[in-house]
Amino acid sequence: MSSAILLKKCSLFVAILLIGQSSFAQINLGKRFSRAVDNGLDKIEGRVTKTNSNNNSSDVAKGSGATHFVNATKLVLPPAKLVFANDFNDTKVGAFPSNWNTNSGGEITTIYGSEDKWLQLSKQGVYFPEDFNILPENFIIQYELYVSENYFLNGTGIQTVFVKSLKNRLGYIQGSSASNQTIVDVHPWDKNILSTYSVIDAVGGKTANDNNLIRAANDPITVTIIKQGSQMKVYTDNDKVWDLPRAFQVGMPYSLLFANEVAEGAIYMANLRISEVL
Image 1 (cartoon, helix red, strand yellow):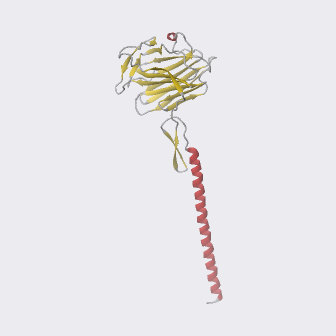
Image 2 (tube, rainbow, N blue to C red; image 1 turned 135 degrees about the vertical axis):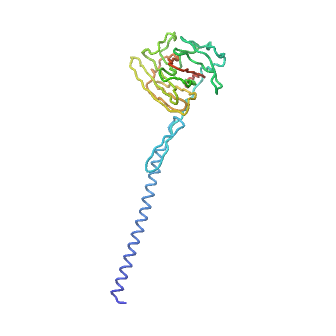
Image 3 (cartoon, helix red, strand yellow; image 1 turned 90 degrees about the horizontal axis):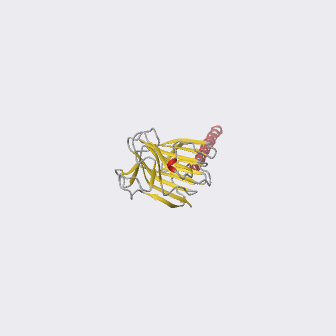
């Protein structure tokens, strides 16, 4: 074999070797880059997947070709002491609770599938437990809410009214623009839970908003309202509906009453519980 031919073969072998090394280096670089991207995505996913504190459902966020689940928060009650409870078990069906008062009417009834007794409210009025008026400075209010299948959208649900202390709650005028009052209206309708709030501060300034949640069926709802300082949180079942930092006047004594105005159908409440936040 001539020296020229041998030199050409050696050069070709070296070239193939270099190309192979280059390809191997590129493959390793690709693997290192892929691992770096995966590690980066893992860190991002760790930041995206977080636990708040609202409900049992999960919101879905899509990115980088993957699906990540963001856990919504569940209802967590602060430490509290029960100060009032009324389940209407001592009232006969068809009667109005003897320890409540109203400017309208209502009666105790039962609902198929529920072991509780329910207060069916009249078409329009105010209602309140006579032996409980002024709320603690910080409190939790909970009650069960249900509406009939033919309950109509027009009108209100149950309005939970917090108003500057009233000696005569029967004299409260629905729709009044009195200062120092906060109203939460939860209005189930079909498979929706409509809710509104209205806050009128000490100088008459008003803040209001509305919200709508979708649910699976017209089932009873647990309404939870928490006051801590000036903050108000409102939940329907485990869903946080409102979280308002300036809904109440700190140090203001608030009276409690309920109100409604129904166009069609019936609205019911049960198991009222009032606790003082510790």
